[in-house]
Image (cartoon, rainbow, N blue to C red; front, side, top):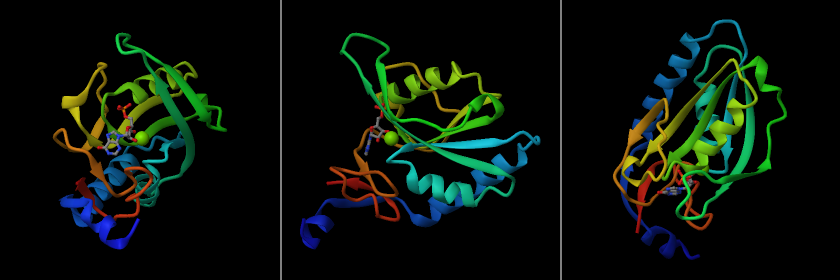
Amino acid sequence: MTKNEFNSHIKEVLISEKEIADAVAELGRKISDSYDGNPILLVSILKGSFIFLSDLCRAVTVPCEIGFMCAKSYYQDTVSSGVVNITMDLEQDISKYHVIIVEDIVDTGRTLNDVVNLLKSRNPLSLQVFTLLDKPSRRTVEFDPDIALFTIPDLFVIGYGLDCGEHFRNLPYIAEYN
Ligand code: IMP
Ligand code: MG
């Protein structure tokens, strides 16, 4: 891809670096304030949430660990739950942790619905889902994150970890894809 092509796909900045940084800092404070002495595990669903996770964990001022999962859900169109294929799993025994799933975007809700069901079956102390972005108008399964930093309309977005064909994850803001 040429530089011109790259730039021509960035239609409009929807959420600026500053807006993201402020929201992430506040979420870090919220996590820190909730600390009860039990370990916290921030679980990043790869790849889209790697930048959100790296900023968020540095906004947390209490002990916390991080873990990574790679998950893909497969559905047939008419069924309301799918088979979640975990291509990379957590190392931790999560029964000892307050688990916070850190996600880039909730779109149809299918991936997180399946990941949440899987992790619940491992009996964590608690389980919450914090997402950077939420596109509620796209939902095909009933699923609500505990916290969504930004709710957006039905647009395809790129940047701050989110890709189109593996490009644009490195943009420091969220933009609409052209
Ligand atoms: P789900 O449809 O809620 O299961 O979301 C699955 C995944 O699709 C998300 O974790 C993202 O990686 C990707 N995705 C959904 N909407 C967008 C978008 O607007 N831009 C980039 N990736 C997206
Ligand atoms: Mg994702």
